[in-house]
Amino acid sequence: MTTTNEIRAIAQTAARPVDDPHSLVPTTIPEPVPGAHDLLVEVRAVSVNPVDVKLRGGAEPDGGLRVLGFDASGTVRAVGAAVTRFTPGDEVSYAGAIDRPGSNAELQLVDERIVGRKPSTMTHTEAAALPLTAITAWESLFDKLRITPDATGTLLVVGGAGGVGSIAIQLVRALLPGIRVVATASRPESETWVRDLGAHEVVDHHGDLAAQVLAIAPDGIEWILTTNSSGQLPVYERILRTFGQIVAIDDPEQVDVVALKSKALTWHWEFMFARSLHGAADLVEQHRILDRVADLVDEGRVRGTATTVLRPITAETLREAHRLVESGRVIGKVVVTDEPED
Image (tube, rainbow, N blue to C red):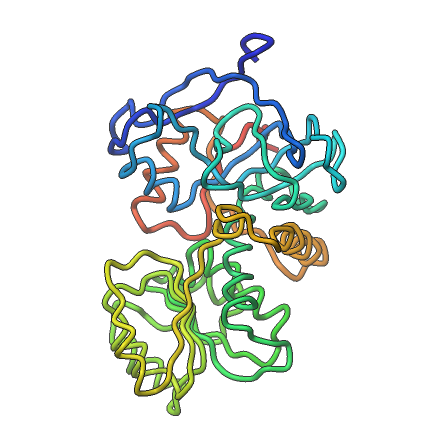
């Protein structure tokens, strides 16, 4: 820590390409002071998500400075007056909020209602890979598609080897025994990854996706979780059964939902920051989701998804992490950590 009142951080000062050495720069910011529901967390590890890449490259920071970073794992340093779930010294992990300073800093404020305990069987490095994707996958499956433990049918996970897909496959296998998972993967290493996570079948999204899925499920499928829906609605309409459902987590330029009317298909948006951004009455659900996922990890029913680890947390390593995520070829998650290598 530089002074009593300042902490080190890595910030975006303008929308720049990742190869620009000024796209992420070291800086100092005032040490944050917890509000009523806040935890002040000493950050030990972070992971980089597509939202980090999107903001760094395409969104000018308000006031000329933005500390990015959403996923994090660390130790509670101090708590606000209304905090009831955590105490200093607790190890936690979380995905943060899109409208508050991020985790690319020594210390970060985060509302306790969106924080979970760090799985006891994981290091901070491993735990940092989970929160954003776990919340996204959980809300997609259970809040949006509303799949229940006694349900039967087939779920297509488009982008099965990515961060969200990697967790969604595992949650289905752990909690939804009647669901068959078909995951997309376009490379041999991606196919191996999703099969190891529990996918029953694998199809190549660079090929004729509809033909491949219908060869597996000739009568069509019930659900699609998609990370890449741009231009895909005709394919999705073809492979879904009547009253089928789609949940999308990406940002397509246009969605022609009229095309879904003939089969009475349902389109859902999933955006895990919605609860915190709009002060949802059930904000604490994200705390409960993260604790439930931590239980599944500690029970050995869900495994970590960190596949690339960079050390330590610097502007240089974060730019490299952004570069990897921006390539679109990452399997699992990229983590940047201050934890020493074993």
